[in-house]
Image (cartoon, rainbow, N blue to C red; front, side, top):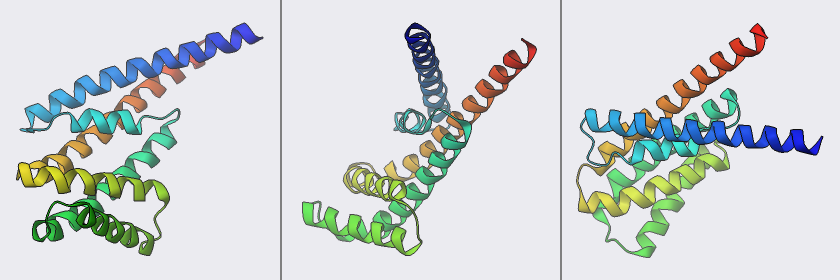
Length: 163
């Protein structure tokens, strides 16, 4: 029984490794094709959103997009008026989190808001296109993750039904 459980876990980890790898390749190349200067953002979304089930992947993808949008809005409109310092970052994160709480969003969205604010706050001062790349590449990453999961589950379900 223990051997079967280990084999099942190893198979699932292997499948996850392949999905993460293929998703990262596809999303990186698609982001580059669409003009991104920060193509690593797409695989980041793939890696963060692929979960064990299609429902969990979609749920986390939606939360990532919502958090990214809120974080972008807060940062793009306010951050240019603030110096890059810890207190500025803290105020922006607090504001973004309270907007999320006002909208009754969960803690996963708050984490995504905070991550987006951190990176956009820092990198937008260095590269004026980071926020645009972040929004486009996050969308590409979550779409690739969702499509990859959909294809995988369709193939997996077809194989299990035919046996």
